[in-house]
Length: 76
Image (cartoon, rainbow, N blue to C red; front, side, top):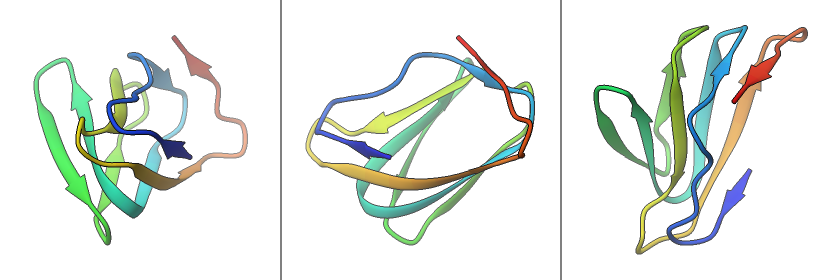
């Protein structure tokens, strides 16, 4: 998934755990409680059912590979 600077998705949940592998730039992973900046080489674990969003910082492109369960369903 590729994000332009400042682009992000909206709050959502997954029915499976999600793992993000950052491969380019700087991004943010946010829950309803906190925002964490991540960068190339970082890995993020988002548990099933955790309401979250992710996207690029305002200053950087951001790309990640997302790993989800085969039968995952996403709810916005």
